[in-house]
Each structure stands twice: as structure tokens, then as C-alpha cells.
Length: 140
Image 1 (cartoon, rainbow, N blue to C red):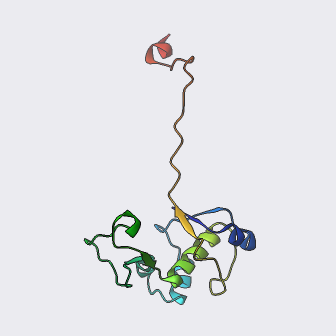
Image 2: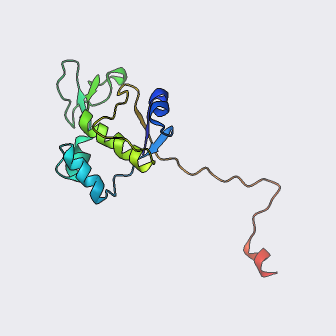
Image 3: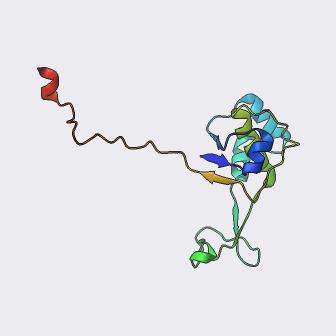
């Protein structure tokens, strides 16, 4: 997964356009910093990153309910984020991209941040006029 900050945030922070996020491995130093931000364990931090889906009255839409977006005929009109957890996530992604910033002073536009899936490898196209090398070619 990648985080994509606003263009203004990227310029101000000196960050690349896309910040790779890998939460499968957290170092001891990262875990210590995560703890100072109020998340006792990396698992609790990861759990706090999940957004709660909200209906028009601000009530949480539970799993199993119609959790599609209202624009698609569902109940969900908004999401509740743990901004502290997302700040730690952005800090972590910046740190791993070589951008040094203090997590307690980090600011970014929460309305502009998005996520993107990992890039899938591009399919390799073989020109039609080139025949693939087969077993018979390697024997001769």
C-alpha cells in the first residue's frame, strides 16, 4: 500500500509523491515511538488505523449491515478516523522514505491524503515478429 499526500504537503515536507507503507515489520525504535503516541503495542496501533463507517446520523455502520457508500445505495456517508494513528502512519512512511520529521509536530491535510494499492507488475509484451524461445531452440 502507498500513502499519497497532497502536492502541497509533499513539497513542504520534502516527501516523494507516493510513500510506501509496510506494517508487517516494525522495528524496536518505531515501536517505542508508536508507544509514546499512545498505542501500547504495534497491534493496537494497526487496529486504530481502521476507519469506522458512519451513517447520516453519525452512528457506526456495523459489519453485516449495508456498508456500501450512500452514493451506491448504502448507509455510509462518512468515516471516523483515529487521527493520532494516521499521524503515526504518515510519520512512519516518511521516516522510511528518508524524510526526518517530529511525529508530534507533523501536520498534513487530512482531506487530501489518499491510499493507493501496490503497483502490479506490468505485463511484458513480446513483439509479434519475435517467436518465443522454445525447447527445440535450446537443443540445437
